Length: 174
Picture (cartoon, rainbow, N blue to C red):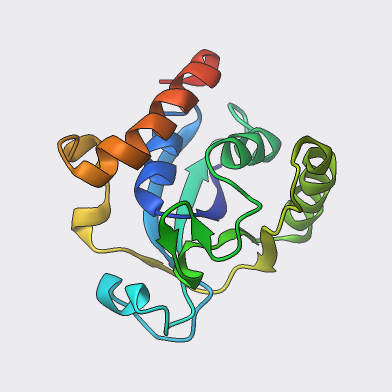
């Protein structure tokens, strides 16, 4: 039976692209979470006024990959020490977050932050919050990185992260 995990690590294009290439991940879906607007659009989320984070919902098979490994991947593909931003992407929608679905996910996320903190010069500020309603992003955001390799943002920001993850996680790459 599939389980779910929800992560926010800046722009969802790269996060979604990486998770969709991991063995044991059935699907990774770009979307929005933990805001106040019902059925938000990308345009609304980009204003920073909805409270949503750009996030990725990961449907995974725990018999193939566990939640702890997903956390390891998540922390390796973004900077968890930047508040409300990832590089040049600035705003609350780009915050680092883990949105847990049960007490076990919460405990594992908190444990992972403690374990990783000594490896970062700055404090990890990833929010660990209960998941509220996840809204899938518009269709054109799904699979965006791999479908738009010519996009300047993808070339400069997302593709290097994607390729780094491909090397780091080669043993579990599809």
